[in-house]
Every structure is written in structure tokens, then in C-alpha cells.
Amino acid sequence: MAKGFLLGVDIGTYESKGVITTLEGEVVNIQVHPHTMQIPRQGWAEHDPEKDWWGDYCFLTKALLQATGINPKEILAVACSAIGPCMLPIDKDGNPLRMGVLYGVDTRATAEISKLEEKYGKKTLFEQTGNELSSQAVGPKILWLKHNEPEIYKKAYKIIPATTFMTGRLTGKFVMDHLTASFYNPLYDYKNCCWSKEYCNGIIEPERLPDLGWGPDFIGTVTHTAAEQTGLAEGTPVMVGTVDAAAEAVSVGVVSPGQMMLMYGSTIFMYIIQDKPVIDDRIWACRYVFDGTTANAAGMATSGALTRWFRDKLAPDLVQHEEQTGENAYGILVKQASEIPAGSEGLVVLPYFSGERTPINDPRARGVYFGLTLSHTRAHLFRAALEGIAYGVNHHFEIMREHNAEPREIVAVGGGTKNQLWLQAVSDTCNVVQRVPAVTVGASYGDCFLAGLGAGVFNTYQDIQHWMNYVKTVTPDSQNHLVYEKYYKIYRDLYERNKDLMHQMYNLV
Image (tube, rainbow, N blue to C red; front, side, top):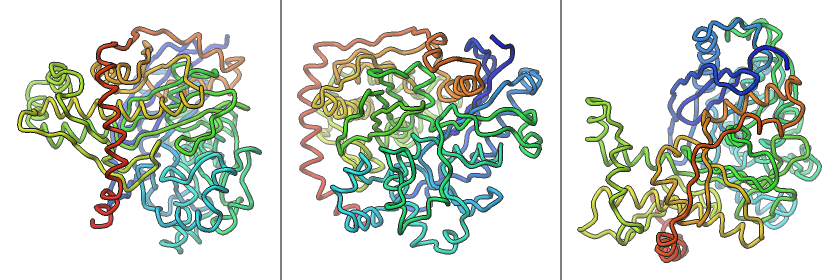
């Protein structure tokens, strides 16, 4: 094997992370840089591309090289990932023309979704793309830009996602991976792996979208200007990259049919690799990271973000205590909630605090605490929030069971895996075993492997298994599962009986 190092950077919702690894997968150094998500209006979610995306990228690459003392020329290749799918209009020089519009947590394009469904027919769109139009779809958001910011739309040379913005800055070439393109529906022809002229018509010309490639494909090298800004060596190979959740799945060896990644992040995200994806309007069918691979994906809108909201809004005293003593606020909440029995003594939470993506695909859904009594405490409320997210995960497993497509192996990743109570609630509710890997650096670790694969350091994507080591297995508690079965039925009925009221409330604000 060649000598040298690999570098990966991932741009997340609230922070970015960079890592340098050896060719054997050993982590040499990790750097993290926080940023904020802007919510200028209800239903909007944005990032500043210059500050949050490229600014973080440059900070991290310089910090990694400085911390390790590695000669930039020893970095054999780089790849990056980012939140996706996003929507950013740029000029010919790659400069942003507005703030970046984020993935499914941004629900601004509901009117455009309705217009496209009226134009083509909801059933026809689903049959052609394998997915329903939802807040995760970028096509309606581009149409929103065209309708609401026409001058910016006209000026746009390309409309791209966050990962492409980074690789474009590095190489001067704008390429998007097929997995991300799968969520640019209805613009992407899933069956033929190309942009659809029929569905681009009336929204955007295909040539104003990025070229297409697979995650580990080589697209170019670091330019002189990019080298000065990042500290990387001019001429360093750059790969296409992918979205953060997919890079995270790769990072824990989820590359073969039957394997599933369950990511506990700001949102819950799932990938299950399939020989042939399930076509169901409640989940997403997509291309995967590697040439010819396919998957089903699913994503809840508010998960770790809900626990963050709970900590900051309902436990500010614990946040202050953490600042004063260093004792983690989440740790205290988890400890207290662990003393509450399964079911939170009669509480059910609908975790739709930012609307919901899969499986209900309802941006107008709203969060609910149901069953409150004077006997409930903050610990009950926190446990119920974790259980509500677990019920949402189980809703996805229920769909997979309907299609006889349950995963044979589940790997849990993300910052939420530090929360044993949350992990256990999911295993107990869904009656599944989860494995937690020893290295949980995240998507940036997967980016390193993609960089090495594209540079020819590895022969096949199965070589990621040589990097794998698992340290924990979470098994379901049969008694808790029986309890959760009863609460899950209430969870399912609660949304169906109240969604009309949720929609009415949405329209009042």
C-alpha cells in the first residue's frame, strides 16, 4: 500500500468536522468548528455558504495540517460531504447569489409542490421518480426561487448543493453525486441516472445543474487559489463526495445489501442498502454512493434538534450548571429520565416540531405532548421525547416489514449514540439489535475512505470493512417492547386524528 494520508471534511447542520486518517483507517487528528442554522422566517432554514460552508472548510483543513505537522503534499486525496440536499444559486465564478436553502427542514416550497403535482399528477410523478415530492425535494425549491426571487434565478449560472459548492471551490468544476441528485426530484431520471429534460422543463435547464458522478469519482485537483485558502497542496486529487448521511453510512461499513445505517443526529436519518429499492410513497428510493448501487432512505425532521430544544428551553438551569461545573446537561437529563418507566407513565410525544419528512411527509405537522398530568415531571417529558422519536423510527420499520425488506444488520451512528437511553428506547420499541462502531467520527471519516477509493488506494468499496471495529451491541428488552407496542398504537392514531387541526394551526401562524 502507498504511504501518505487521507483528508475528509463534513459540513453539518450545526457544526463541521474534519479528519485526517492513515491509509489503514487510523485517526490522526480531528477538528471541529461550530456554526449556526438561520431561521429568517417560519419554515425557512438557511446557511451562509461563504461563512458556514467554505469558511469552515478552510478553517478545518488548515487546523488539521497545523495540528499534525503533516506536509500537505503527503495528503494523497481529499473528499467532502455536507448536509443535503441543499439549494444554492451561484454565478460563473462559483460565488453564492443568496443564502443556501437547506434540506427537508426547510419547508418554504409547499405551494410549488402543489403546483407540480397539479401539473403532472401526483401518481405520475411518483411512478417516474420513485419518490413523492416533499420538503426534501429540491425541484420545488428551485421553482420557489424562480417565483419569488426571479432576478437571482436569472443570474444563476448553476444551482448546486453544499458538497458541490465545496468541490467546486477546490477544483473549479461543479459535479454532483447521483445520490444527491436522487433528491433533486422531479428533475432526476432515477432509472437512467441523468437529468430529465421532461421534468426540468418549466423549472430549470439541465445545463444549469451540475454534471453527475459517483461519490468516489475523481473530478479534478486543488487549484492554486484553493491551495492558498485551504493550506492543501496544489494538485491534490478531489473526489465528488456525497451527502453527510451517506458518507456516515460508508464510515461504518454500510455498503452491502441488507445493511442499514441509523444515524442519531440533529435529525434521524436512515439508509438501507438494497439489491432493488422498495418503491413506497412514504420513504425515499435513491441511488447510493457507488456506481450501480441503490438504497432506500428515510429522514425524520426533528430528533437531536428536539433534545437540543428541550435542553435549552426547558432545562436552562442544567445548561448553567454545566457552564459552572462541567457536568453535562444532557447527561443529567438522561440519568433522571432513566429512572422513569417505559412509556413515561402515560405520555406520548409526536416529534413533529419542524413538520415531518418520512414517513408522513407533512411539513404542516406539529409537535404534540399527549397525556400530560400534574404528576409528570421534566424527567417524564424528556424520556417521552426520546420515546416519541423511537416511535417515529418504528414507523419506518413497519413499512419495511410490509415489503419484507427489513435490514439484516443495523449500525447506529451519530452523536446521539452517546445517549444509552435513546438507543435502548429504539431497540425496545422496534425490537431490533443495533451495533455501535468503535470509531464514530462520522461522515468525515467516510469521506477519507471515498478519497482513498477514488485515488486508487483501495480496490473496492468492500475494503472499508478493514477499518471496522464494533464496541457495543444494544439488544431489545422484551418487557419494554410489550409496553411500547401499546403506546405505539396511540402514537399512530394521534397524528391521524389531529392532522387536520395541525394544518389549521399552521395556517394561523
